[in-house]
Length: 409
Image (tube, rainbow, N blue to C red; front, top):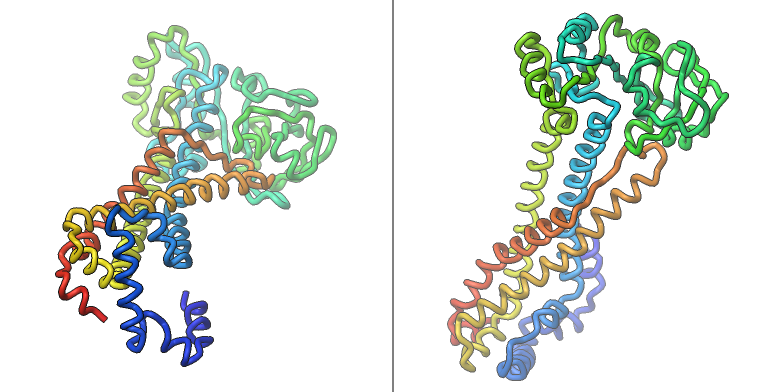
């Protein structure tokens, strides 16, 4: 942060430095220019944009500094909402059951482990039509650090969730379906063979679901996925179909009362009830708070420096009849404009970062969701930063005595 200012200072010649308006020997010249500037603008409110343009480099750096914080807010909110949307698309699909069950209290969905006997017991309830077990795990492939492994009974109703665009569904243990994003990233197709952990599998189909993280992996027979993930007789989720939609809530409560270690959620609300998403949202909130604090400090520092540099001008304006309220509103207006510019820049940077990252085949699971409401809230936050960051400098400027300000060197 100090390299450019240091280089700029080292290049100054003594004569140029002594002629600078802020130097002691240039005080009379500074007074003249300041008074002329004040007189020219005394009849009307100075445009905030012109005032910010006096220090273009500082304005640009301030906009970028605050914009990075705003970009972090936009990107994190977009990722969080994107994850919720993807999980709800996964669990809320018509073929994925009315209820989604997972182990209670696990910090990560992939760590959920439910004994298959629980599924058989739930399947015996008169209100339940069917129960499908699903196992989930992760591995890595060349160029894909996160390859999702999904295991399902080939005859499960939930298998219809994976729409086969090329080839056919799996029929044998040594077969697999490959997601579209993974197929593009790995340059694999129907008929190819893949090594996944300690097993070798023939790709018999390429599936599409519209869910990025699902398409960044493969689907295997349940028994085979349990074997390669070392989870014998365990599943990550139970997908429950209820005969009568009116009995969904009753079945959910009955399952949780009977099996204390199982957390049951209505499938369309599955994402919001997972510890993963709740943790992500908490982390997002903490990072947003830090970004707000940093942004407020940047605005505060910039406006204080502006007030110091324009002390004589403010004194002249006060001497020419400007009221304290007018001085205060002028400074706050500049701070608000500065933060609004930073807000727009930050929103564009945040969306751009997520969209560029999602172009990489290995990051196809990274899908951001940006709603107009969320972007509007971000702009309100940015403008609010400008108001808060500009209040103290504005108050300080409005309290300046004309005599003291005109004496300021």
